[in-house]
Image 1 (cartoon, rainbow, N blue to C red):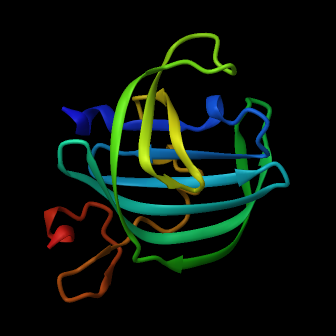
Image 2 (image 1 turned 30 degrees about the vertical axis):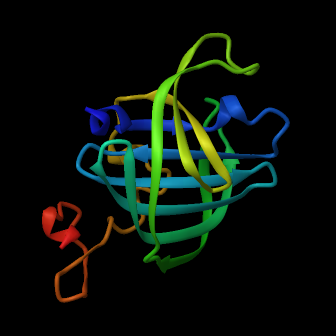
Amino acid sequence: METELLVGLWDSGPYDYGAMESSWLGFLPDGRGWSGWESASGGMEMTRFRWRCPEPALLELRHQQSFSGEWQATDNAGFTVTSLGSQEPDDEVMLTRFTIGPDKTILADETFTALHLEKPLWFCSTFALSRHAISLQDDPIHATPPFPSYSSEGGLRQDPSAGPEFWA
């Protein structure tokens, strides 16, 4: 049940009162995802990961790629990535306890669904659910080469449909 509740786009916006930075998370239902950080000065960092819940209320993120670059605001209150400076493999594994429940902040007019992580990700541990509907096109750099996965022999495999063997 908790796994389905994590699927979607999450944003730190309602918790960013007075901050010059913001973070976001995307959890796809197939176990892929991404996290990102952006600053008011136009800098950004992103990580693509595989995710799962090995036990209730425990989230495992296996980072695969890290990116840095620059962004620019768009008319529809979103942003577009204007350049990618670096793209590197990333093998960090993060385990963190989490809770999901209702919350309200000074920046939100209404109560929203919140994700609270025990350990921060991109300097943030609280995120508001933007929406459950999500696709790979919601990844801000979705046009960058596909999510990698690693074969059991340890080699990089560019197969975005990698299944349970990824966790072996």
